[in-house]
Image 1: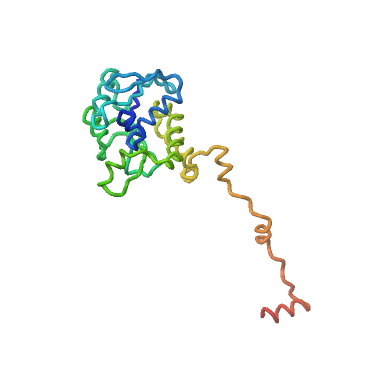
Image 2: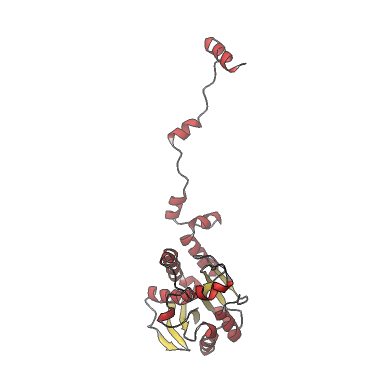
Length: 243
């Protein structure tokens, strides 16, 4: 059993908050993979069991509020005897620009109260999918910023990001984190993927293929006709251009 945890705060009041992007990712995985059971209350959260690729997976959205997320995660982990490396926590990251993401294993909590609680209950060795929401620029504005809703314009990057996470969630469940990250980069940042030497799809190749030079540009690059070395034309050119 693998455990994928989306972090957020329960209730309609918080549903559209930047802090709830983990819940949104879990909901999108659930929506796009028909084999998952309906959400039900368990382990101090909302859970759904299903399969992603070759793995049996438990999706979990803690109902304990962000600061106590570890209670819910720890309870589910102990019940199913899941190792920390088989747990992925999806959460909002202030230190990443909007639409950016990072996969990593272990590390500190970086001031994120949800991670702080989870690490206190199960240790730091779980895997993390950090989803960038940007920073308001002033520490005093952070609380209102993360508890504020995504703007309408944010949907231009938020919806594709959540869709790609859900569509490639089988790689995440199978702990193929590099392949998962490559797939997302290829879909969301094809030019960056090309610069980094990652394979591109036929469609991407077509978009990024250098344009053919125009016939005018090609004509400019053709070798110039040789100048005459003798005769009236040569004499005239010498007078105009010098020897």
